[in-house]
Image (cartoon, rainbow, N blue to C red):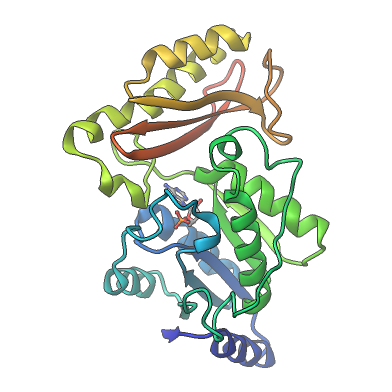
Length: 289
Ligand code: AMP
């Protein structure tokens, strides 16, 4: 497994892989890897000849008051997880402003998908998805991959990336992977490490609330307002950023469920903001997420 530390090194590696006739897959991450990330690697590994993981805490997607400087890092553990998953190359782009990085001095371009960059996380994080779309565009082009996989954990992000790749004709297959949870149901996240032991216990209320909502939908409760009240009542958090039931593709808020919908939540415990989502499927058990 190779570690690559500049855009030029990454491009040269990919050029060689292509010249050897290999297909390339990419798993973009911000590091501090956990089994959710590992599941993306395991999913993509058999689909491509060469598997690349990128590890980059992207400054464009953080607001000044957010945790860019304190985002958890553990490069040695990350490398061990990548090795275990049979990764061929790990790409560590240098920081913004470095001429060898994704954003060399003078980089000004931004990518936006306005139709999906509103509501849900976009309301409290107005620059977040522009930062995500821009870095993912850069990564897909630099790596020159055939496929990339993203987790449904970040459902709005996945929708935005799919649309960007379609609109810009990037010729990369985007695969969405199921959300991986802790045994008690908490969605795995690098940020869970921030939770105090008491907040860690309360954090399970996010997945419980979504589970209760799905159970209600499965037994025929299809009006969204009462479902939201049910969910809100089950959340044991300091602040609800949002709890919304949306169309699974357009992400538009729904008043009544007809066919499969998506419920998404963001909530704050202590200083930590957590997100979760799951399918809402009338008259069915729904997916495991
Ligand atoms: P991050 O490092 O948080 O930017 O996440 C990198 C990729 O891993 C994104 O595509 C996420 O959606 C995905 N991911 C993060 N947590 C999970 C999880 N619990 N289950 C599945 N995918 C995840």
